Image (cartoon, rainbow, N blue to C red; front, side, top):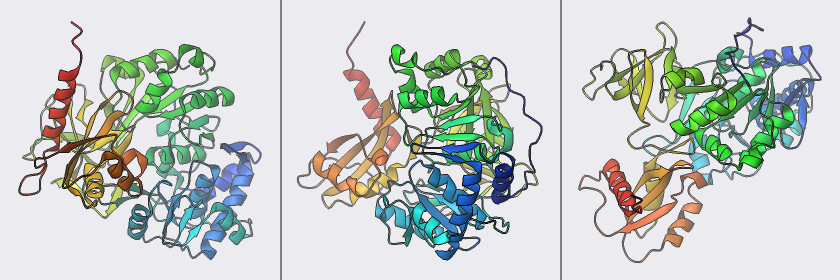
Length: 504
């Protein structure tokens, strides 16, 4: 366990190298060292370089051209990262797509991406031409060296958008090794990084590709399991771990005798992000792993700006997500006026002056203020030392286990049922997941909860489906079709508190 921050090493490679050139460089330096371990096998750097050459050729034969955006819908396997590097070697952009998406959601995203093909293991059904990793390898045939090309866009992440319609967040960086953040995540060539998060989410994808461009060994878990995560840290003597607060909570709540079975003393860095972390939980991890090992980052996929905080800093600024380490952040009121320190307002970000845009949307537009300021909808304040404190993570968006869920998307799916007149979805506090989705539904006729659940099964991925339902007779929305979700949520929280037993 770390007792002091680790100093960044001297630059180990040219950050302007393409992903393909960087991979080939590492493979020449340590061809037989492990690079990716999944549930089935461990791949060496030589094998990764050769397999991604072959996949790149297979992608070309499947119709992928330089500049294309190609969706990847695969579980956490070495194949996912092999396809990503194969796309970069072909000059194309990987688009991270959940392998649990229903066909209608997948096709909407593929249409936005203008993807020529979908790479999947068959778990996502789509009207687009689909290829598995094995099919691309067979199509590619030759694993010999390739001409070096540069993908114009590093990655394309997916978001449901506050309107419930999908959007793509196209990186403003090309496919260069520097795009993954360099030393930001405190990963060096000798590190072993355990990744229990799904690669179709932005942070796990960026952190995993960062580890590979740094020359580290990545251990992928097929899915998050609290004990299996500790087991992987112990078995591989991992030095680096990615988690979100829900994962932290489930690990921490394991029986003490289970946690004691595994040695986690090799860890020098544990990053958590994607959702606010309860102070009691963060402090528990700081005491367990060490204050300078616990790291937190607050930013959007759009990457205009970011804050970072160490565990030691957090103990002195309890509840903060850190100081701004890249770009700028400031809070503004509803009139667009910049607020003084200590006042809560909407957080706006802007990239460093003179730098190119960090992203571009497909299917959405940014919320902006004059001067290059952009908002992701979060609310917070800064203290006198420049530390940011989040007051809310958006007025409508709900964070469920570190994943962003947009009520409008769920309401649209609910409203597709012929007996649903209107609906509203809110997040209610949940100790394990942060929030649990609660659907308030106005129906016409007779409709059961079981029928609604069956209706949503084919429309939404599991984490977007409400956990609880409430049927009401009165209007949920006003005459303009607007709904006050905050008021609905507050009413239900008040009921929950009133129903709690009196322990006085």
